[in-house]
Length: 517
Image (tube, rainbow, N blue to C red):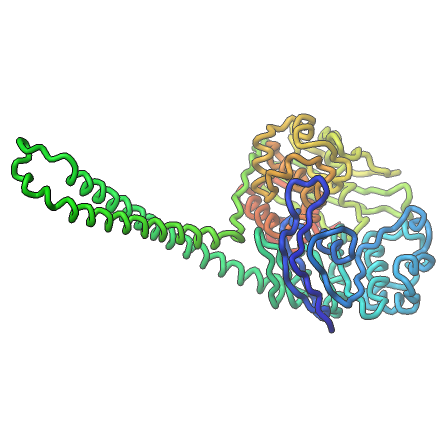
């Protein structure tokens, strides 16, 4: 057991307008199971790369620990080979028998090590890389969002596996995973960084309590500032009025005050005393304002999002009957005899393991409704060698679609809005509400984090009035605060939806019906 000491770290990317970290200091223990929490773009992955020594920075990071990072970068050449052949290229001196032991804990057969890596499912690839990662000894492991794109079964297996381990930092926005796997949290707040014992739920409960206290204290300070300003204004008015009484006495009009000219020194002293009181009040106001400003630096005041769903004249928007799909490369059908309907107001969650045809089904619905791929997105065509059954959509159906793939989005915000015919000011306003800083708007979208890119697609969908919203894994890489915002939005406006999402808490709260594939 050893300590990792972070002392006065300051870092910004070359050409960036702002610092990612500024004079940051804290310590963590290498024996902890540490969850790293923060909004998209706050520097979670950047912090892991600083520990790995990938960037130059001001300040010091001192530790005797050896760091290793998940996910490993797999080359095209390695993709064509079995993992058993290149595992030692990923992690020095790793032994195959140890990897096999780790795979057993992940409920996976060792035979996947001997199949070409590109033929493995996303869940199998994740398990292989985690097994390689944990096959070493005494390393402090940096695990960056291991459950993205994984189905529910694979998520549960990874969750059970990580809950038995220790000595790692886990970056994840999956509340269920964080609760099960961590015993400490490292939180990148809006202005500060804190380390706290517990899991996500205990930290969130503490944060809500702390935020309520900060808001109550803030209101108290505002009232005190208001009272002080009123008192200062009255005292200043009295001082000015008194000051005017010692200057310019008319002996004809003010004959009764001629004898009071000798009181000028007294009036002057009284005026100075009042002016000193005004100055003291102004100093107190300044102190109160300073305390007030310090209270709210880390308050996450999420703004309620808005949606503009359209109402279709028909009750049933999508009708799927006895539908079957078979891939060109598959041995058998992906699914058969699938039947369900999407009616106005329903939120249908498509659920099943990776490769069961969820995205294929979504693309079939889009094609039936006449939706084409948007600029920067991959085509909607799917490589199927057989389709059977019925897939119908209501005439004149307008669909707002979020693709799970963000790789094709390029250019700046202005270009993106122009290509999709979006109002740029409203679009930027939604992004601000989702937590993006204004400074990000000057960057090209390809320089955004994955979570920020996903928010671009979410904002575009929210700004598109539609009868039906089809979202394919919209929450991959999206931070916890934005997930809660989106949950509240959907529960408030109750749009008609078809969506795929492996975040179990989101699905349980949002779905009115689950279709199992």
